[in-house]
Length: 156
Image 1 (cartoon, helix red, strand yellow):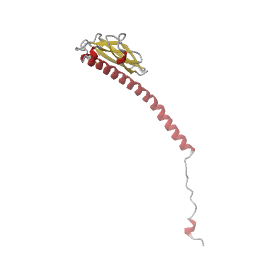
Image 2 (cartoon, one colour):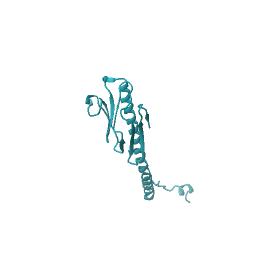
Image 3 (tube, helix red, strand yellow):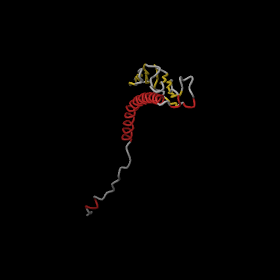
Image 4 (tube, one colour):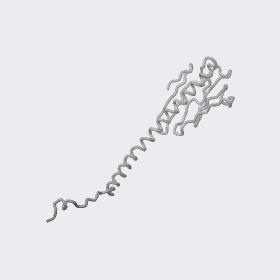
């Protein structure tokens, strides 16, 4: 008679790898997650670009005001806002500036500025020659307003 232990000693083959169904389910899951996350990421990126642009404009205006109050270079300082960049300049106007002292900061293509385009600050007091609002609009139509008053105070 055969040994009962010998009967149980059959060859088990391990199933290695994945079935086609498992691979398709994983790919479908990844595709669904990507389809959900890409638009969310894009929207967050545009919002971040708007926040960065608002901070850059604000800090550049403050730097121009501080340089004017310190009478750095015995001249006034100002800011010129254009569609693709912001320029900190030394002089009474952007047209009459000393280009050797220009500091240029780029704006994201997702952000469109409007409103005040140029502000020059007076020596010592740091009051601006122009007051009003700078409006930054993102490609998602989010808006950030920066208001410059007659005392040079920025509100955003």
